[in-house]
Length: 87
Length: 449
Image 1 (spheres, chains in turn cyan, purple):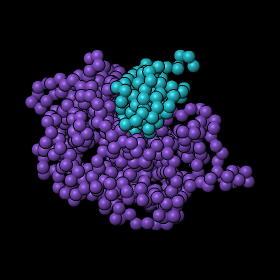
Image 2 (cartoon, rainbow over the protein chains, first blue to last red):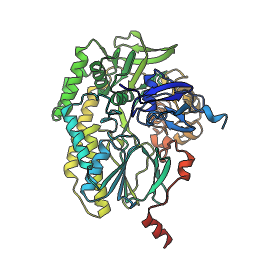
Image 3 (spheres, one colour):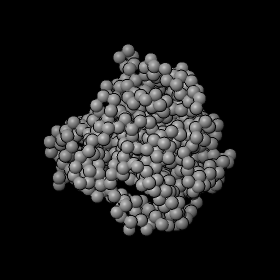
Image 4 (cartoon, rainbow over the protein chains, first blue to last red):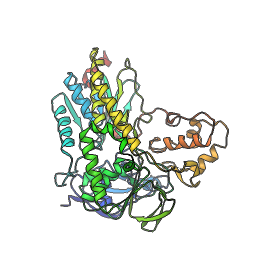
């Protein structure tokens, strides 16, 4: 299966396939913890349907559900809580 | 862009069935789906043409094609990657186009909310650890990617979904380590008769069960996962077996599932005289599975169309079929009923996380309940239970169950006491609101005149 591109998660290059969500690509890269939310709790893939809000990550500054958001070339993905201090 | 007569939230079986029915009745429909493809959880599509889809039964394939055929007409417009934010005080439906990053306002006459079910997950220490997901979450990702979850995977909880997922993983080449099941469906063959009337359900269930039984995967019935701990890279699940002994199973991923529940948490529905009319449909209203969701979607589409057109319409045939779908769900619940006593939440260690979003524990709730007569509303506002971004979808039921367990003799709290009614909170950038487009031209004129 061919790689459609690469995005960056906390400095690491993550390959993804066409149409794949950020959560699916992180999971394929064996990443289970998606960083910390703004309260310091670990975020991770859980329900897969956008209901639990446990997989929130920050994409180019905006918080999104990793399980709903398609990966795109060059995205900068960080932990949901990461920007808070500097914002 | 003229306002659609109806906005439907969710492109799963109920939403698609509702859209087809409303369009057949002559209404224009905009169906919004938060993902880039239709299907919901049950018909989740592979994420690209390159992915080899998991095999589906012929009956499921027929259902899916007929749902798509129902909406393949000009009166139905589908908006992908679009989430629903709510209905404002003026009756505008707010939607968020996640690709364009704009919020839009629509002014339909009716809204059908068909956002599916949520999975129940019983409390166990460690359920909130990274690496632990819902079994349904693992299954939808498998449907998207075409590949079984990697590594050593343990499935635990109760219900037919665990059997289905185990069989799919076996067929995809990575069998789970074991399936831990609180019930013992094999010991209850007499619970099945209502299923016989549904050959499609029955043949799929038999096929999954046979795949599991013929494999080397251990199906630990009458057992439950007592706790999960992380040891470095590995998750350790302590399983309480039926004979009272304990076994520790090491896994890379754990899928938990204790049944499905309605995903209508906090969502208002509005009276028939309201503008717009708001109707819940499918598993979001009543968790009846895919066949029930299609029937209920048809019912909602037909009912909403009749209300909009000020006509009356008979629901007798659909209601009768829905009653059969309920009987099937009851039979499945009997089949998978626990055969061992599962520990009450009050018996769990105090540091067991109860509300993940706010990091509130069983001990926090116990301490709060020291105050006599404390209400569900206070548990939320003072204790922050069900206060976080999941809006109580994964903690309100467990919290109220524990409150009932600990406040013996008191009024049994309702989930609604904790969740209240509010439209879904979704991460939406302020810029998307700033970019909110104008109302449709017809309505602009109306407001100016």
